Image (cartoon, rainbow, N blue to C red; front, top):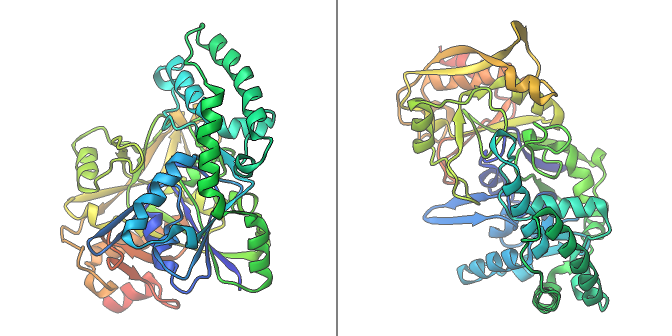
Length: 441
């Protein structure tokens, strides 16, 4: 049974968690394979709101095994806090989740490094991280010498390893900060993280083996991407990106499952665009319309609470990430947020130094210089939050969605009209928006 994956096609915050929750029904495993606590997923079921960071969105469904695999970096106090918040709500995370022994651990020196680099780099060059130590942890993973993996926390060699790393990191931090770095207490770290290791021990396992066994046993597996494809470390808007492969290219490397086994990839994008932190944003709206979208869409970070930058839908960027991630269909979210606008614009091409281009530049300096070329669409001026089928949507809204299909080159499978699980319209297999519009006319 081929694997299925949900991927964000923009700069993250596309409402992937809701779709993962919907698709979890009938699945045997849900897998989180990259990113860290810098990713925020929100799932709304009736009056219940679940804000998840580390833990896969499938955790809400009983009978499903949730895995956090080697491509993820784990912050033990953060994941334990998240676990403890779910237990009183009847979700026994210890029975529903396994953590890879190979996953790397965000240590105290990583958060210090994150804050230090953030202070040293100012202006438009500041990447705007969540300051949770994610980037420095991935850097140590690649550098290898100072890396600690989750399975190390429960090994006898852990104390000596921490002492040696603290010795070196103290010198590095002091030199980089002019001798004003915060002090790292090795013994305190050893005590604290040994305790974390013991508390997490029941869940620490070899998730690579578990997944490969599941593949051999023809299990039904859903992979959950974090952040968005435009933040991919190799293929995104570098250096204003995350520290992992947030596009479809990272599924196999982050989880350990062979890429040729994953056949269905559903991309997720909003009806407009948002991003958090620094970096170019061609369609950004620094005006009343941008603020209107922010307020109506509640565009404030799940993880940081920071207001998100808002703009029109960028079809050039999403067409690029749809091809990059190999999506087979996509989900359009937040349709309800545009319901009060008289007119809606979509970026269909760029002007780069006077030349019209239809591709997404790979060089950040070029991306900073592009000017969006827009196509205008009429708004539908109708509340759609109660829609449960295409029949309930105004024609202008369906026409807008169909235009995005044509621009992206992939069919829409789901349309979301609100945060609740029930506020999701499934475009049945064999149905196309083009044929539906013909029938309606």
